[in-house]
Length: 305
Image (tube, rainbow, N blue to C red; front, side, top):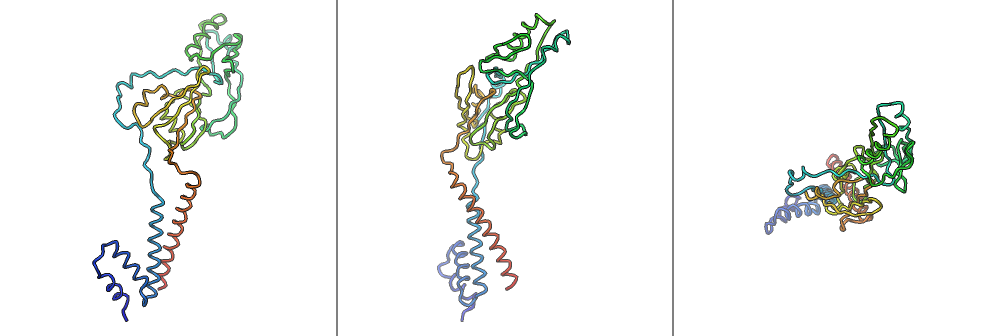
């Protein structure tokens, strides 16, 4: 009666198969060797372990990361570009602090009303509204200022608003000047990004690359060459398309975001639906658990043989 070694060698000497075939043939015939029950069970477990490991590796396929700004960049030309000034719009909360040579008289103009605004995704306050002092631009583009009454500010830059206030305040104050800030400068990020939501911009200036960084970058299923920016200026809505994979994005009028812009990162048409993603995750988890259990079983078999 042939032993295990003789049984295997007699089967593997025929035709000199390749390494992969020898590997498969050896394990298969060891598992099926009629006179080696212990080795047969051990080798069957090894085959199952190798199979489950292969399935696990197959289920953990990686996707190429998003590449930004591919190609040469003309840094000299970009350094000459002007950063656009933000324009005051309806719904903006504007902080205005007045100064002059007479602090006591100036204090009357610094009694700003408290305005409640919604919290944003980057504030860390959850959904709790925030109360801030400032002048809210109403639906008609106006604010109500102490003693000066109703002022139309929509469409003005901060510098233009300061010039208007200095002219009107000169009737009451000596050498007046103002410090003006946007208190709710924000943008909305939607689509294939790490974290969708509304984000505040403390510095009143942000570009599309910085905005994507705040939102956790583009996901593996997002299109870097198809980013839509929805902008509303003076009651008119415009749409821009950005391609962050190309250096040409720097020359786009939508590269620098304006307050209240909506950014939408479109999804790849080949993105699997929710059910397919769930099935893939479940398959990977099952393969992982199976591999662990088979590994433990192999160790126990080797110990108690």
